[in-house]
Length: 271
Image (cartoon, rainbow, N blue to C red; front, side, top):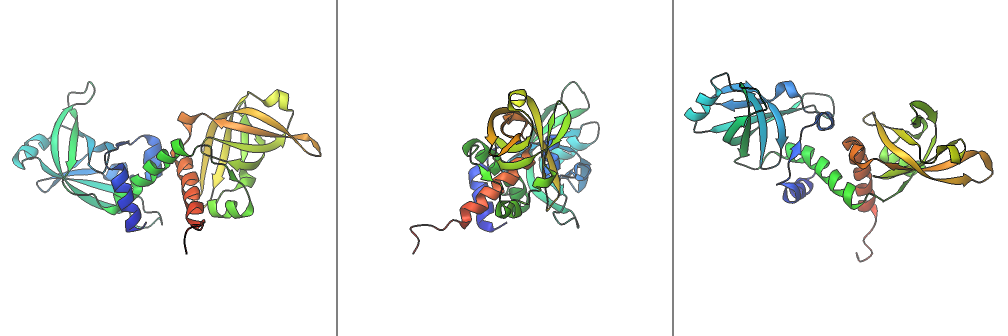
């Protein structure tokens, strides 16, 4: 990722928190067992609850000497991040110099607290790039949700989509289908069937990608149908996804393709 891109991410999203749900952990490749708070030369295992480019909230055990160490160090700490490497080699590890702003009990546990950590310097570009991809995809999900990507040989190659693997699950039964277009908010496919028995049914669409190999199951509903010319046994169906359930990894795939296509379009005012 270029320095220009990471700077853009930082400027646009520096105050926005990302909560590390199971989906986010999987997409970012966060290695949860390797996250530590460093204070006074000692390391304490912790859990990242959320993070932005300005700081983080972490969960840690207070039945240790962590609180005393923080007081002795005037709340100066470093937060150790660890992510899987995209190429599968050594993990990406870095510390961010920080300051603890305080803590509060976490839930009903009396030995666990959630700490507010403020970064005292701009975090490394690795963190900005990893989190920026998520924030940018969510931003464009709202802004460009209706932009349709027609599945052609060219778009298939650039997006690394595997349309032959596509399947739609109707009442939990998989049915083979042909993917015709996709967007942030929906898709169009062709399959065998009768439109009147399919429209308004709740479904789940499985879309597979390569480089790296990923499979996403996206819940939605058949909302419209079209005839397939010359084929009475086939029907074209439009799917509307359940927006709150669209996987972040799928959003990133769509977002990065749309960005690639945008960069490839020449500027008509350029000379």
